[in-house]
Image (cartoon, rainbow, N blue to C red):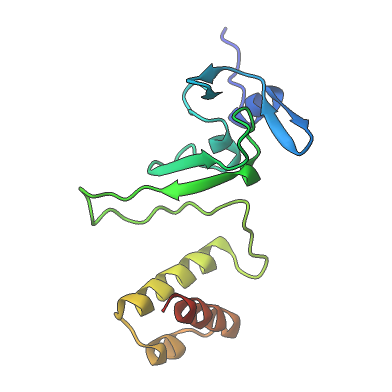
Length: 146
């Protein structure tokens, strides 16, 4: 009988160690960068990007063996071929909002984008949104982007 599969997070934690604020990868490297078969860069596991295509990760700390999620920036790729592709549902686990659930954050993002695109007005958003905290966040984000 085959051995049960080990979860990716367990594999990554087993192959890495913390050294002076850096999470150093002790597994395979490909072209000088950390590599985990089937995933690519193991930091994708910590950032929950394994099932989300269209995102790149770039190391900011300069230490190639480091896989500390806070030392990476995530870049969403632009699709020049499929402009109608829906926006990814990925939420950055490094940025947590204690005030809003994932569903509420998604609704806020949609309303802000609608305001920026001019599809709705602030009065429309005020009439539809019943939660005062969500309304304040929508208006704050939309005004900051304008």
